[in-house]
Amino acid sequence: MAMSLSSSHLIARTADFVREKFLHEGSGHDWEHIRRVWQVARALAQETPGADPVVTELAALLHDVADWKFHDGDEEAGPRAARAWLQELAVEEPVISHIETIIREISFKGLGVPTPMSTPEGELVQDADRLDAIGAIGVARAFAYGGHKGRPLHDPSVPPVVHDSFESYKKNAGPTINHFYEKLLFLHERLQTPAARRVARQRQQFMEDFLAQFLSEWEGRDLAPA
Ligand code: ADP
Ligand code: NI
Image (tube, rainbow, N blue to C red; front, side):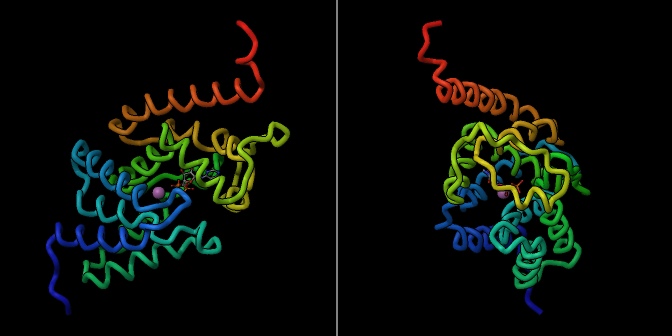
């Protein structure tokens, strides 16, 4: 039986493991995304009495460790990879299963699909992950992902879809602008912690301004004198 590591050592080892794994990822699921989610989740945890900071930080670090999008749609790949790593560190079983649950619950699954988190730590990590999908960084990540998938920026002939099941959302392959109307513009309403809702306000405004400007340029409306 391995000796149990101190919390700060556990977090540092996990950060090293994830950094190593994701350093050269180019689809917007890179180490810097995880680093931001980790830092934001840690800050949100400080404003949330009752949330265990160690579970929050470990779950934030491991939340994308094996995303279904890159594992043939396998939703259990993430929880499984997190468990294997945490077992290697001899983390106690209740903490491991809590983190597995967070990873299982965290993903957006379509606008018509509720994604409640069953614990406060889960809410913090989900909010931190969603804050990183909106604002300037959210815009950049959406186009990075769309480019990675070879999708057009915009195609007005393809209407956005409200996905009512995770299966339908997973198959989604529309132009990147549609992703804003299918997900990103609605994330702010689904944040659960007051601290995250406060941060989201300006990010939301920026994203709405970006879309208005994008569509104005696309349609050539900014060419005409007002
Ligand atoms: P979540 O963290 O809720 O699981 P995802 O892992 O689906 O979110 O998304 C991670 C990043 O990839 C986000 O910034 C998201 O906007 C972007 N992304 C996911 N799907 C698409 C898509 N179809 N088009 C453009 N960007 C996408
Ligand atoms: Ni993420």
